[in-house]
Length: 139
Image 1 (tube, rainbow, N blue to C red):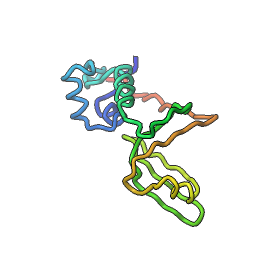
Image 2 (cartoon, one colour):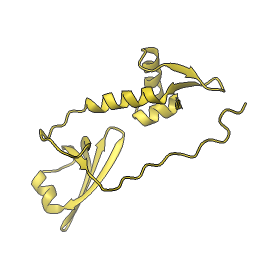
Image 3 (tube, helix red, strand yellow):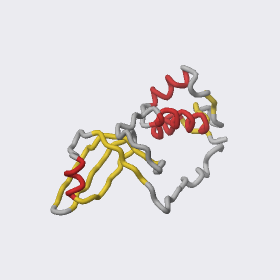
């Protein structure tokens, strides 16, 4: 079972350590102790909470899509240079950057502060995990 320290759980959820502690106190997560006596939470509980929380984000587009990786967010930066545009979208803790034609950005009416949905459909997505901590579990 994967156990995550409070601070790491907070980082992955994009909230403060205190928010995770309140979620533990409120029963959303079960508090466990690691070998060093630090508070940790179950990674499966965290994943389920993140999935439920992500599902609550409203998709303003009103369309159905085959793309499962959709990020609803706010345009935080827009750079239009000649024929190309770079659009930065903040979706919860995720920053998504898209390059598109300047014409497409104009047609969409994008500007900083616009609500938008980034849709990602790729043939290859890499998944990486951190190396195990060799000092974990030592006293």
